[in-house]
Length: 225
Image (cartoon, rainbow, N blue to C red):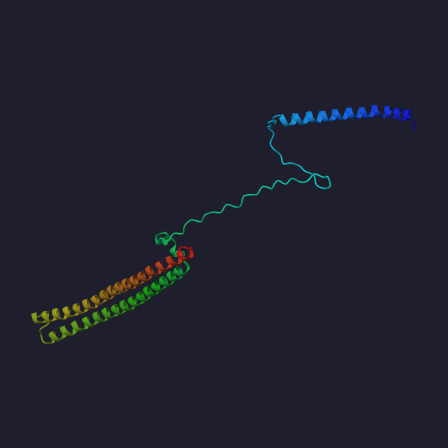
């Protein structure tokens, strides 16, 4: 290739290279200007709520947000009230405590049996009393008739001696009948005392059982630890 051809080729290529060079310079200038403006510009204050950055995975697809999921609050734990250890707080419920309730049933049955037995004894005693009073009345009539017959046979049926003897005999029968009535009254009074003693003994057992029942209730409620 001659010098002229080389010169022509250089001249033919040079304008294109120059244009490319000029365009490259402009690109560099624009990049520098952009970079300078970016570095000195104040960051704009945005009122938009910040969002989680979105990135892509190796396949070029948008990756899911890595924001941790909100955790639901756990259940609210109720604070159990303090267990009372005051016996007075359980008094109104003692009757519902199983062991005490069974004991109470037993006491009531025992008292009913005791009273039924007392009534049976009282009825028997009263029947005996009535029989004795009836027999006493018959004996009185017989004895008074015999007394009159005896004194009349001796001609003293209207005498003061007979009247004294008759009054004495009547007083004897009255005293005997009063003794029967006193015995009946004393029997009833003794039954009343016996019932009182039996009831008192039951009440003492009941009081002790109530305290034991209350302690069991406190333990069952968790207050005996």
